[in-house]
Length: 472
Image (cartoon, rainbow, N blue to C red; front, side):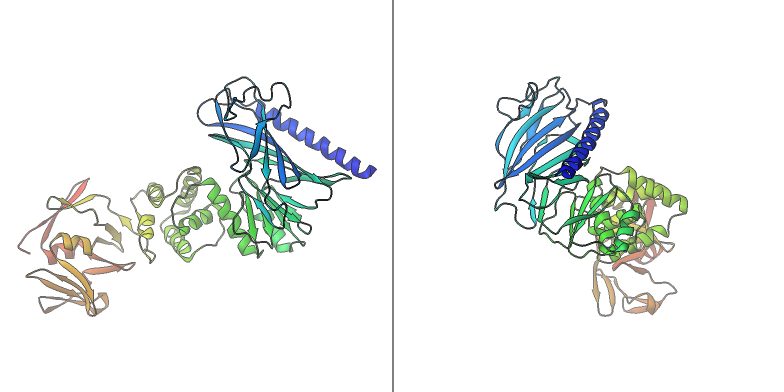
């Protein structure tokens, strides 16, 4: 018993020193009073008879009205009167902290745990927060009766845990917010911890997994807890449940979780997420489309341009990432305009790398919104379907090639490998095909467009105007 008390006392001393330093760091910072602001928090949790009793302390608050977002399942939400000033700013309806000089405020609430602490218990969105606030640092203390044995996981780094005569105690602390708790009965234990990762498993982890955790690039400062050998229908915030713990899975899942926490990808396809993660981490994984796109982009860049490209990706942290945003950044790196990423979003096949002519295209006075112009293999190519239809033709693909028809002019293009085309039932041999197929799409080369379809092109910095030179 003396040994346990001694260990517990030592842990409390370490905790006290760490919290003092944390308070000094964040107290010395100037807190902005505009709409967005930063704060830190300390959360004390006691599990009793099917519920979590929570005492939640908000620290380093700005002198402004701050709306409280209570957990949806919270009951008995009220002030926690730790000191005479700990609730001085809490409004009567308990919806906000009013503007005031007190930098620390405390509340309490109870979170019912349906069914109690059963195996693999994931409790989501159970902590209060402040509207528009950014949590810089969180410290969590969890206590249970000594008869309740098992492992808590928060996503924060675990500082320590103790089993004493009357209570089991765990502490977690680190940068960023906290939303969820995970519980598993005896058997799960912290097997490995690095600056960025904690890995919990029932058995000691293999040497290659341990080495990988030490070597994985850190893309985001928020700690991630990995629970190996366990699956969940839902992921926890800052938690990864990995039924199969392999080096390949660990690399992909950790890097993707970090990437998704520092960028807003919206509805961008998976290959874009994989591509950004691979560029920033230097690791190779992901979908075939992501790998193919990286190979194409790399083929266009020098070493200096690759460094500039990676720098620009890092500078986009916190921004919404779309194909068009990436196109703009890549165009700036290359010094030439491209819509390469956007073109790959809209096709099942991977486009080879192309540059784009971004000028507006007009047929007569009509703007052609669906005509793309690309530079590919030294050729200036126009999307065939949309442009030729704008010129009054119908287009179709049949067993003998690509057909372009008007009332008086009929073309058939059998393909580049055949070395000829047919016009009004007469065959014409060619050294180069008028049409090109790029990623499954038909394009017509500019010189052939003028020659076969009797058009004139007028170009300026903003537009390309196409007019017919003879009766079609």
